[in-house]
Image (tube, rainbow, N blue to C red):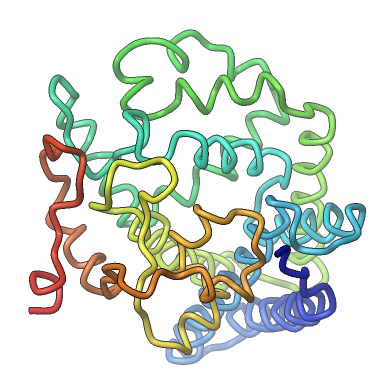
Length: 309
């Protein structure tokens, strides 16, 4: 049975979260209190993840049943990241196609891989540096779409290890003009925010630094040390329900990978009753210990008692 898209709920949540993000950016830029600045940045990091969760729905075309509204609302949501809907969608659908394959097991060290590069990748995710990739890569695409055809991004062991070989090739089918216009829209909206809200780099930077750390904390915890299976290689993580609400059930990631056309509101219905569900914090803390050797059978080496001890 096809689950209905919560059209009105998504629009209302998006409008409220956008308003909150705009206010917090303004507050962070106009306060003289470090306590208020940090508080505004932390709250922004959660509300902007709400916007990203809706943006993720738009990528799968389940944000709104009206396709035109899905695309335009998704583009505005993307400006808060900031990135392009079309650019991010290509990469995200590529992720679904290659999840936990030899191209996307950043948590496991495979025989013959460049170990220092593996650790650099890993800690770029954990420290929030990875957040810069979508804005920088999409901006580069707007300036010169041809960069995705650079041979070093498509061929060789490093290209395979970093997954750039699959990501670069997925843009061969991308809507080039649309993406470039979307990046321009994101830039214009960010510039308008700076001008109309009289933002400064301290406030903006604090908010987006907090967002980068918060966003990156989940972006691989929902896959880390799971089975090497393209569809089921993810976790339905347990987490504080308030946090899960901000992320719109994004922690139910295995359910999403197994049912990518099911809206966020219904993902809990698709969680297997007897499956192993680790706590988010347990996985996140384990990630800081670094990548592990690839299991010979491709099965997760983790067990419930190990994570809950």
